[in-house]
Length: 111
Length: 113
Figure (cartoon, rainbow over the protein chains, first blue to last red):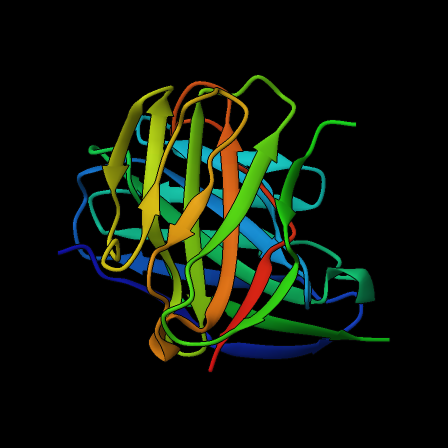
């Protein structure tokens, strides 16, 4: 069964820092991997989607990488801002079209 | 505005009283899905649908039913709710399959007494 972990569980940084969030999974048989952010009391917003054949995706200050062979993905956030404070989740799409989510990293960016 | 809507947003009910949570999307998406989110357990998929009349189980389907009679709607039915179904529920959709960006609804917070 696919297991997904995210490290760290929580992170607090001063504004302006570059940071890395990690997502690890046990089975490399995935279709794709998505990173989402969740704001308190709200739904999820998709940030980046990496197909299994890709190594990375970039959107603005965000860069996500995928290494299927080692079962790892990282989300890099450059020049963090207080508006980046949220919970970040990674989600794996399996070949049966069902999803498995990680537990999330709760990020707090201090002004 | 392109969106996924859920109703109700908040619901308190009692054990055994059947309820339905509606989900609707206006983006002509083929793929729709239901999740529940619980502290310490994260988001878990309940059911998903690749197209009208096509549904399949996710990780935690027990105690839930779904139907997909129209492309835009994907209701979640709890025939006999129990306290362990108290949770935050999300509906999501994507254009043609899970391999594309998913768009989430705002969530439905359910309390079963």
